[in-house]
Image 1 (tube, rainbow, N blue to C red):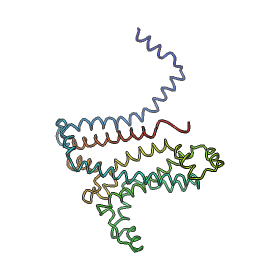
Image 2 (image 1 turned 30 degrees about the horizontal axis):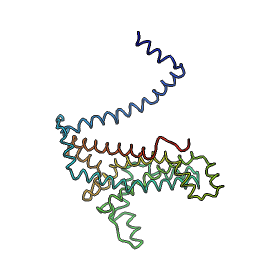
Image 3 (image 1 turned 180 degrees about the horizontal axis):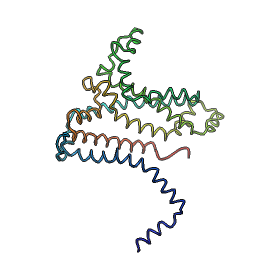
Image 4 (image 1 turned 120 degrees about the vertical axis):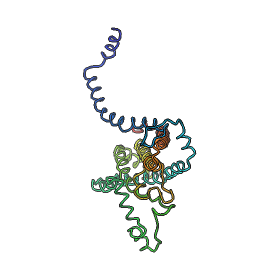
Length: 305
């Protein structure tokens, strides 16, 4: 009876409308919660469990304790994969973010055309595999249109994806081309939420375009910037499709980023337990990065308030 009384006491202050709103809210997030549980939470827990086992998918997993993590610590190819992933992120993110921001500011100031936005977003609407195949053909050292243009300008042919020193930068360039439009649209949405009277007041005070960009646009775009950086960096660490289609980790392992190496171990070498241990390490890196990034950029605060 005491328990029922306590529940009734807690339930009493909520009106019928409040209970309806609460129920509707839980009902709306339920599909997302189910999707998150099925496709993220449960696989993550299962991968953590498998990371302590030796499993080749043909027999039952055998518990081996921390052996996979010890092997990972001593595996030079694992560290090379992490190094190539960090290198790829450094090549990809700054240029992609800067170009996306430039396009967003240009669209905001020069045109509101839906056609222009559609053209800029078009590469993102293509699948990763299709984009990789298109660029694989265009960058072909013998038949590719890019080398035809280069030689017509008097320069030597470039190996691009066939050169260990150029392959990773070339893949970064392909993904910058594909994702730049999406980043621009996200920034444009943020720009359109900035009150116009701030720019008008700054213009009356004699502020230049650069001063308005530095002191108004950039600070007020911070929440969008956090979202773009967190999603772009975590997405870049997980790059696989473009690498698998264009270079397959080569030449000489120069593009064997960490996710490609994990999938190699899982489905080519049948080391599912070891691949799970490396996945846990990559997950930890991305969680730490996200927490640090959101903390440094004060993601929960808004300058518009």
